[in-house]
Amino acid sequence: MRKFMLLSLFFLFFISSTHAQFLQIYHIDVGQGDSTLVVAPSGKTLLIDGGDTGKGSSRVLPVLQALKITALDFTVASHYDSDHIGGLDEVIQSLPGGVTGKAYDRGGSNTTGAFRQYAEAVGDKRTEIAVGERIDMGEGVEVICVAVNQKVIGDREVTPLIDDENGNSVALLIRMEDFDYFVGGDLTGGGRSGSKRTPDVETLVSQAIGDVDVLRISHHGSDTSSNAGFLTALRPEVAVISVGNGGRNAAIFRHPRRSVLTRLQSLRPVSLRSIFTTERGETDDGLRPQDMEFLKIAEDNVVITTNGRSYTVNGAVFPADGVRSSIAVAPGGTGGGGNGN
Image 1 (cartoon, rainbow, N blue to C red):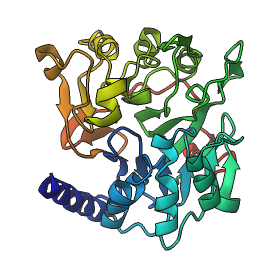
Image 2: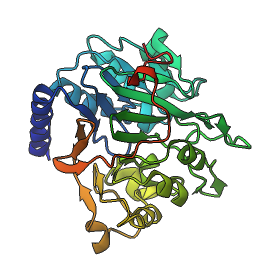
Image 3: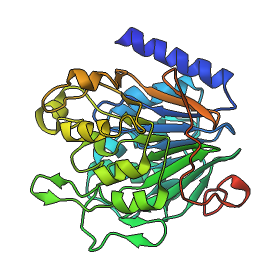
């Protein structure tokens, strides 16, 4: 595993130094958690989440160091669960330049230690992100906040609002030319968490954004997310799941859930071509032969590189489908509106 990690870091350094004209999205293997690094052709950087406590230092920082990143232009905390923000303070405090731009989150507060450490680390850089806000990454790359706190771009809102940390997640659409990518933290789609039904934010999001090329599966493939209507509307060619082996996933969560894998498989052959996972995960009844026909288990980082017309995922080549999401491009095409700078 250590040898594989070293090879992966060498690969990251190689592509960062030879493919500066590409948009790169790194799904960092933080086990049962999320951390996504976006590096634009302009060199601007955005880190979305930092994994659980300890993973910022052990998993995220080595990737940044391999890419010679000494400061982050922007960060986004999708929501306040520790497996998403627990490592952010470790990353920010370890980088010589910290965060030079804004540290976006959903606003409000949380009583956990992970939140307090995060808030202290970002300090006065902390900024509540608004629905419709665009983060300017330069050179034709735009990042659009399509949902936060159960409010969705286009003046849509879940009714009635349900107090739900996952449902309040920040959801982002990232795009460059014909390439569209969606990431939404632990965004919910009305599935159940125990006896509690979660708010259905996904359906409103799907109505707002439509087709994407790559979908980052929300909540590690939990039953609370990835409802059938959402998946059908987004029609991804590739899905990426950040998931862990063993630990709480084996004992409690069993991600990715069988129901989510089944719904994803139902998209074939119309759209879905492959699912990439950072680790094997702990699917409730185990992986089946039909799963392995389209499942690609990295046991490492999952890296997307795109020129806006085609893209690779860990070296596998895919064409962008040419269908743009239904959200209008900002004037000038660079997504320079809002408070991105």
